[in-house]
Each structure stands twice: as C-alpha cells, then as structure tokens.
Amino acid sequence: MTGKCFVDTNVLLYSFDRREPQKCAAACALIRGLESDANLVVSSQVLQEFYVASTHPRKLALPAADADNVVQRLAAGTVVHVTPPMVVSAIHRHRADVLSFWDALIIESAIAGGCTTLYTEDLNNGQMYGPLRVVNPFD
Image (cartoon, rainbow, N blue to C red; front, side):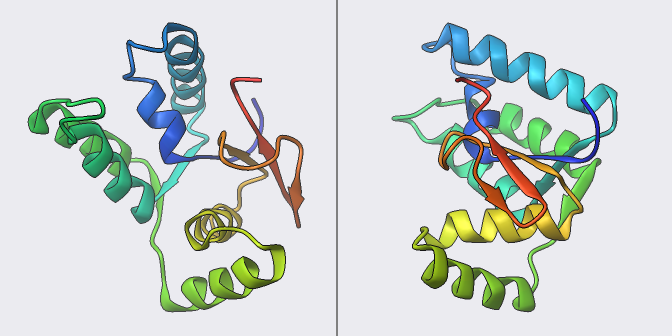
C-alpha cells in the first residue's frame, strides 16, 4: 500500500462485526496494513461516528470502554480535524455531485488529509474525486 489512505467509518465498523466474517477479515487486514505503514488517516467525524455506531445496542454493541480504546488508538494516528471551510466545501460537493452531505464531508476530509485512496463501501468503487480514488475493500 502506498500513500495516505482514508478509512471511512463503515470499514472500521466491519473490523469488529463478527456477523460478517469475510468483511471483518478484509477490514482487519486492511487496517493492520495501513497502521503498520503509518498510512491510515481518519477524521474527527469518523471517530465520532465510530463511537456512536459501535456502541449502539442494535448494531455492534461494543462495550463503551472497548470503543473508547479504539477511538484513542486511532486518535493517536493521523486525524483530519473538520474545519468550517471543509464544511462549506462539503456543502458545495454535496450539491454539485448529488452526494449525501456526510459522504461529501468524508471526501473533503480525505483530500484535506493528502490521501490518494478512500476506503469505503458507501461510494462507487473506482470513482475519482480530484486526486482521490474510491476503493470498496469488499469488492
């Protein structure tokens, strides 16, 4: 793996989802590889979404302490902090590209973080957003 890679919340969640063993294994391998190469990038949005979704009783239901440990580990790496100009850019991208606002903000965060790859299953595999290529790690 080369270059900085942004990992969306859904990929992080699958790395703990034992109900989806193939996706879990793929997500775990991807995250381990990116962490060992110091190429893993997330945003403050991803950290928040991960904690809320992973501890939700109808989703993964991770113990809060476990989710907190994951967030702390990720926060010790490269984190893009969402800024007001990024929010404005995401609004423009949301409207121009007909994306959800949250997906547009993920794209803006990945670009701001200097990433060349965005790992997610929420966008079209292979889609380019400027210098950023979307990759679905489960395809």
